[in-house]
Image (cartoon, rainbow, N blue to C red; front, side, top):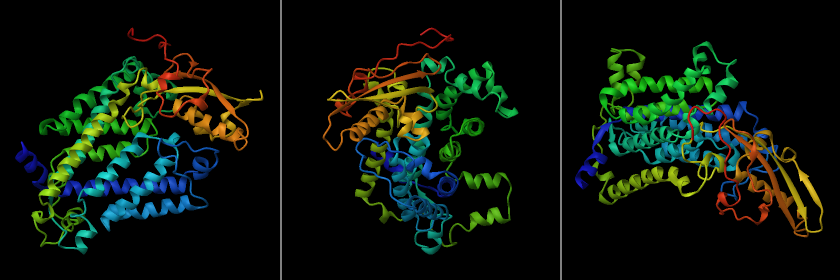
Length: 467
């Protein structure tokens, strides 16, 4: 077994697929920088609010003053160019990772699964030698250039992608999803806006096909990507799936990034196979690939780069990483209740597009001397934060701590904070989310949500199947 693992991890494979992924990934990162830095209102997202919600243990991450965010995106954009062309590759990845992690940690209310996946891929790409082919670094340093790379990097990216795809299917095997919610809610709401190509998604049969097809595509299709005879057909299905998501939902670069990563499950030399299939014998495309490395570049990786301690470290590190990626999305099973309702373990679990929650939250601040204030979150938060916070217990808790600081008059007044939070999950009737007699200032952040969040007892209206 040890010999098999060693052979699989450190055998040499064609470097072209890894180089193409680096280029595609870098271009998508550059697009994010341009899109957020130039076309989105950064003040609306980060500054026009009295509170930025923090991840646990990262409360120390604060917003930098002035035009630092614009400068931040500019530096990240330069780093993205470096990643794309393979110039100062590891430094570029390191800079972009730090910058992206900072933005990710600034406001928990802005969490998106594709942001989390970007961060995961960035950390992985820092260690993976993706600059040996089709890279400026390979041109500048001929001793770095190579037609081949060790297989462990390609395996790591492929295995991570398989985990994401499989979980994206398994998490949808829920009572709500099998009853076509929230897909039907979204499609009925958007029925007048969809282009003709996707009008079928607004009909009941189309909604059912999309809901059950998404499960089948991920649960069955993801493993079939590993089988050479079926992977191309499955990739075509994934292409249509991602194209539909890109048109119907506003999910940024996620479909394109995931599709690009899925290609890592193909043969290592698939770009060259693709060119041969197109019968491109000459011209700019073939010349571009041919210029990736010097003619004298070796076809093997120097054994001195992977001595025994490094090999052990790589095998153990990649294995532990993948085990953690498998375990983390399962943590919600340790907590009672519906994870889509109490959010206890919802993040970092690839639970994508599984719930639609709408609600309101009104806070009551009560002082020891009997003074009482009714607080509307709109007066403290921006619109997106207000909408997100109303139905996410952890954000409600953070806002309560914020109100305690606002009303305690520098420690001179002891106050309690209560909330009347009412939410609807996937077309259910609106019901109370938080126990109204609980003083949120007395709850530690580590306390399980089930101790202060009311259980979800409301059923879906007119379900297809009984619970």
